[in-house]
Image 1 (tube, one colour):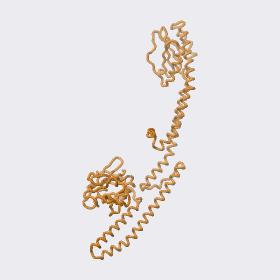
Image 2 (cartoon, one colour; image 1 turned 120 degrees about the horizontal axis):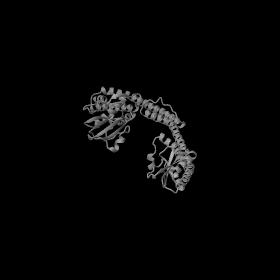
Image 3 (cartoon, one colour; image 1 turned 30 degrees about the vertical axis):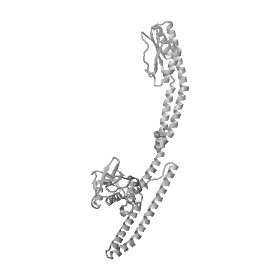
Image 4 (tube, helix red, strand yellow; image 1 turned 45 degrees about the vertical axis):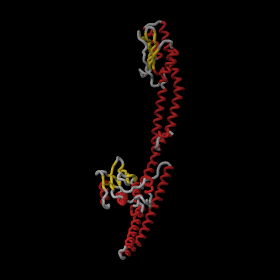
Length: 434
């Protein structure tokens, strides 16, 4: 629907439109009927009265046309009818006209004068604020009349418009304040949900607003409690499993350490090492990152420290010196290490590039390895997913590296995207807000 794209997108804008649109339509309807019924009728009667007076004055002047006659008419009409008369000998009617802001004023007066006068006439309703200039052509020149504006037009029309506009403005201000107060609790609920999704503390959030909004806030708090209990239970269970399995694995390592060095024993030792790495990966995936707070970090120095811990050959780093961001250092280090581990495991060369925009930083990890086909990149993010030809099998083939890295990016309010690298392999880009 073409009209839909022009409608407000926010709740505040839509609620304001719902309230103000009927008010505006009602005000326009009232104004229209007032002007076309009451105001036009009253103004028409006043204009007809003035036009009749001018017509009589012109006829009286024509009985004895002279400047003295015009002066006597002025002495007679000015005190009683607020209508001054003057003869401008030798003048002609102006050729230009100026229309009033409200065209109905000129239309009503023109109709009344046209019905009452047989001579040519001209008038101006804009030159003087409290008077109207009306001129009638006579043989000696122009007979000029100055009439009080309230004699021609109903002044109540402007008063009515003033109060109509004033009432509309007052109603609009009241509506804006009311709607803003109603929309504020929804905005706070959205901010709390976003903060909870990023692992931030939302203990200060309290449901407020209308009963429906408070109910939604209370439901959100209950959901948060259930999610936190689920995470704690999952972490406790996996920690217990990891602890219980490490004990027999340790005994096996001790038993194998006392055995002769043979190919079979070496393979068994490697299997135990892989199992320990898997247990560590499972525990990392289940831990959650709520305990770590954010702090401002120089990102280039942060990445330099991470790269120094990598195996040879070290990835290249391209980064400006001055980029600062609020991050969870341990969590982000785990994410970057997962990406670098993948790159080094499946490629001969890798590099890290740091760039910045007004609101985000981008940490890109690229390599010249086999990459991941576009149609399988979303599948690679799934936990415990292993692609034969892809490279999400870091952490010793557990299949959690990309999943953990993406979770960490989302906890920071960002995302992780997989793209094709200029080096020919995979490009993993961490998008993080500054």
